[in-house]
Length: 435
Image (cartoon, rainbow, N blue to C red):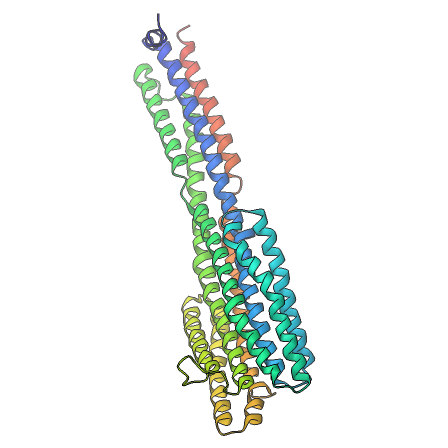
């Protein structure tokens, strides 16, 4: 007799059908536990990456961009201050360059380690930044040396350094930030995905358990089979835990994106816009009208300053709309108020310069008291406060999403194993009646 024939002969008898039912139930429940453990482990890992890896790397890339832009801004400000550059500006420039170098080392180590969005998307940008940063700092040092000697060549070196920063370094930093942000989005997508296979297998197992219980009732008129009831209860608990945990995880990650990540994006744009505006404001005085736009009609740096300020205004408007608590709104409103003040002070400095009073304009831009530099510092401080606040909001919400999945892989596997044992025990109890 062939294998199929023997199988048909076995399942033709009530004990044979019970054995087949027990095997199917055990296989379904074991598969449910295995698939759930595998899927939830992947999603829990992705949620952990969002909190502990991809978002910090995205934040580091934004910090790298800001450090480079701030170094360029401070270099121009120090140049305008005269032959003896103020010690605080020199220290700030050195700190910015050291921070950028440190973040590049960290980014290179991560790119070398691989991961989603890793080497192929970031390594080239990191190599460009590592190669170009020493060139930029060398040009700045030449500008400083010429400035100390009172040579006009210093301004040319500084403009060349700024061109190097704006055409090579900052675009590479922007692409690095985009790559790390894409990695964050991918990790978030994986963490938020519903575990459809696990839910489907679990629901199927629960349906088969219910059918087995109904079959037992129809044939024996016994209301409950303790083994099958215990298996159904364990399966239902695992399914409810799975659905509830993923609902909470998605809610936490949604909050992290809406109340943290989206705000961080526009706030980073605002800080970048303010730094670009300040650098161009300084370079307007360094160049003294020597650098024009492509059409030859306007001062290039003054034009670029206006574009950057417009970008700052748009970013602040976006941040104001996304701020969802008093602390976040207060910081953004403070930045907006000082941006308006900065714009007024800049207009006054421009009028002074257009009247031929270069020294007066210089005092309005880099001097103490009501200068544009003081207004810029207040804008930057307010934006830094807003970024720190939203970073905390993101981390807390994302951590809630990650923690919602804690223990689920092991718990689901244990519950599925208990359910499988209980189901087999329930079937064996019925089999014993045939002996």
